[in-house]
Amino acid sequence: MRTPLIAGNWKMHLNLDQAAELAAAVAGVAEACPDREVMIAPPFTALARVREVAGERLILAGQNVCWEEKGAFTGEIAPPMLRELGCRMAIVGHSERRHVFGEDDAMVNRRLRGAMAHGLVPILCIGETLDEREAGQTMAVLERQVRDGLQQVEISEAAGLVIAYEPVWAIGTGKTASPDQAQEAHEFVRRLLCEVYEKNIAAGIRILYGGSVNAANVDEIMAQADVDGALVGGASLSAETFERIIRFA
Ligand code: PEP
Image 1 (cartoon, rainbow, N blue to C red):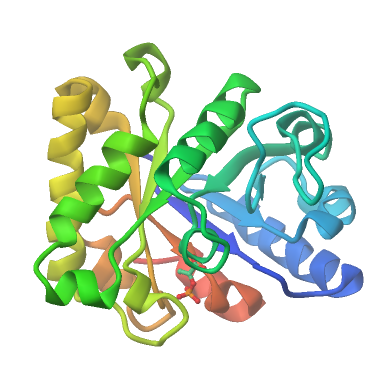
Image 2 (spheres, rainbow, N blue to C red):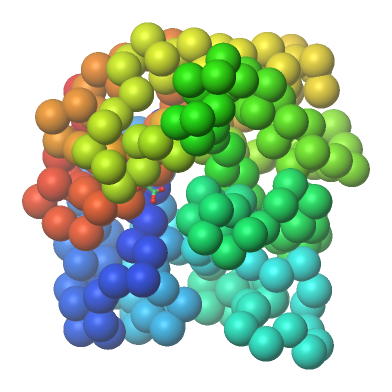
């Protein structure tokens, strides 16, 4: 019922030629796998070039997005600018934005609503730090990030949302949440979405897992009932590894 979504976040990597080469390879895999959706979020500078080779099936996304459509917001990118570059989605609240650049839940919510107002599907990233997990606060943190991140998002708009559970301690560290830990968090988020919206809506919202997903662990993670896809950082920079992830069993 929920089409799996495999998403690559290229972060601040690749020059234009490298980006075009990788995107062309990923686009070929996306064409060959019609039962799953494939997305990449290249650096903003590479979007125009990547679009030339992306084809119809590879979804392009912004790594972040501003809530305003234009104005004095140095360093930001507006939703219509992403749309003009062919983006259909935008990541908001990635842990690097939250923890390196100090974005809080209120700002993440503004970004999410800005994206939606312009027809971009937001991927709302949530996840606890290691300290929060060890202090037994994981579910409380996820609840706050979901409730605050979705403020003022009406039930009529919620169906297309995507959420990515990315434990901060697993991002770029080589430590992956166990399949049970991932399922526990995803199930919790799904139940929460039932409370915030309703069962039918919650059942349709895709919840991706992110945090050191690779070719060796993707199958077990994707086998969990409430895991609907993966948000992949480092491993999405290798065409071969990302292909294996897209082709999860
Ligand atoms: C990410 O950047 O969202 C991510 C999950 O990174 P990695 O796969 O490298 O842990």
